[in-house]
Amino acid sequence: MTVTDHVEADRDLEAFRRRVRAFLDEHAPQPAPRRDDGAGGPVGASPLAPAGEDAVARAQRFQALLFDAGLAGITWPVEYGGRGLSQAHQRVFNEEVAGREVPTGIYTIGHGMCGPTILEHGTEEQKQRYIRPMLRGEEIWCQLFSEPGAGSDVASLQSRAVRDGDEYVLSGQKVWTSGAHYCHYGIVIARTDPDQPKHRGISMFIVDMKAPGVTVRPLRQITGGSNFNEVFFDDVRIPADHLVGGLNEGWRASITMLMNERVAIGAGGAGRNRGTGGVTPYVRAARERGLDRDPVIRQGLAELYTRQQIQGYIGMRVREAVRTGRAPGPEGSVAKLFGAQLARFASDLGMRIAGTAGVAWEPGDQGAERWSMAVLSAPGSAIAGGTNEIQRNIIGERVLGLPKDPQVDRDVPFRDLKVGTQRSDG
Ligand SMILES: Cc1cc2nc3c(=O)[nH]c(=O)nc-3n(C[C@H](O)[C@H](O)[C@H](O)COP(=O)(O)OP(=O)(O)OC[C@H]3O[C@@H](n4cnc5c(N)ncnc54)[C@H](O)[C@@H]3O)c2cc1C
Image 1 (cartoon, helix red, strand yellow):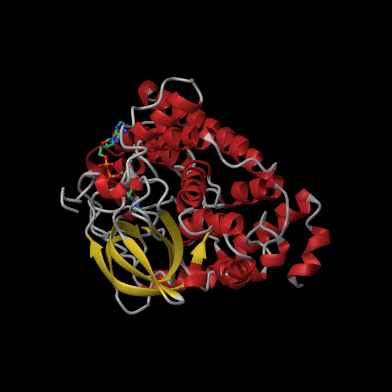
Image 2 (spheres, helix red, strand yellow):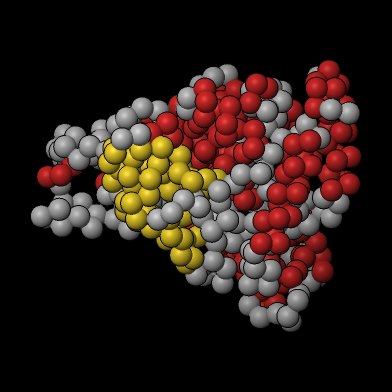
């Protein structure tokens, strides 16, 4: 059966569910607790199973199978390789994939953030060239926003791109770039006009991560893995038609990407099971340790289940808003904040159940290791994609109508600011 053959059949949601289940039974048969190193890395990234070439190759194989079965890009436009199906189909897929170990983590940034940004701000040529290989998993993407002096206030970035003939020349440094070491392309933002105030002189580009002048250096994480990196750009030449969203219009496109990031992380917008792996592994572990009659543990399990359900409903609401054409708004921040708090709650509960086995375990006992990994990666989810404080600021301003943070630098030309690592003479 080809992708087109599936179109008619998939109108029936229950038939679609059976098809998804059959695919997963064949290609992801092991219902398994989800592990993550908190940097959006491949499932299984941990000191015991480091993210390496094999994990990437396996993920690419799986994604190609998913695409060929007509199960990738479920809600994406058909003309660029998506299926053009409804959010209800996406929900069915998410329900079926929950609790299974699927190696789709390396696509969270591409499918959850870069793809939607190119679809909204990219040229027709960019959509035709990049979206299909992105969906099929042949080309993996990263996000190059954060810099040593620009994280929460990313508009303070200092990387620069200067026009030279038909190209831009990019120089500067990025940091915390998840997956840069295995990615083919990245979306980078850089300053193209330092005489404009900081939000106005920024442009967005597609950058080839294998281009001369790109250096990727891994950073070691608390989990023991090294899934994010420092990235240095030394006079990297970017073709002018790799500009996304217009010269000095990069901030608008960045907002699109950041909003999609909150949805991807908080609401599973990329179709990834980003939750805490369902309640079943916790119940199973409590039973194994004779704690399933403990009233405090039972209360914790009930609260975990309730919070997971609420996260699912928030996700449905956010995705429905996206489906009806509304750009993801502050509800993405609610989802992201709720998800980070849930990750912390779940990891604390896991440790209470695991006891000493969550602190020291026999080599190879991955059942015990997962509790420790959850604790070590939970703080990352309160930082990645905008910290909890930043999400609270957004909710305060845009939902509760509270006054904005004072921004005295908003109308000052960037070159006159003392921001980040920029010195007074900079
Ligand atoms: C696991 C992980 C993966 C990541 N992957 C990527 C990636 O792929 N690409 C990428 O570009 N970046 C990535 N990041 C970087 C991430 O976006 C930044 O770490 C984040 O935006 C915070 O920036 P910062 O670390 O510079 O902290 P800072 O901005 O320096 O913040 C320091 C502290 O100050 C608080 N703070 C700052 N401003 C305010 C304010 N206005 N009001 C209240 N409190 C405030 C913050 O909440 C925080 O507690 C990743 C981070 C993590 C943890």
